[in-house]
Amino acid sequence: MLSLLLGMAVASSAPAHTAVIDMDVESCMAQRLRPLVGPAGVRRPWPIATQVPGHLRDRMGVQISSQGVVSDGYNHWLLLDRDANAAWVVQRGGYAGRETFYGPFPLASCPQVAAGT
Image (cartoon, rainbow, N blue to C red; front, side):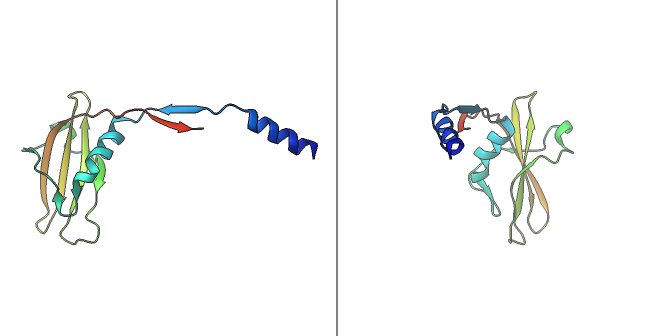
């Protein structure tokens, strides 16, 4: 019984710590762009690029949207070029399997997120 009370006292007297977590650029960009794309395509006019830089062409990227149950829907992938401080969104899908490149977009920085530990 004493050990239980002692444990509770120590736990209640421990200071609350808050850790600051820095969100990485890829997660930040995905979080910001995800609401702007969906199975029907992009939800607002974006700049269309003829293609993405060659060194990014064969990269898979981060999927930010899925066609879901829409048979002719679009999937969207985020590609980052940290050296150029730019991002592109690749839209793939539709009936003909089209591929459209959007961007470049400047890389975003998200504020730090506080998390209790």
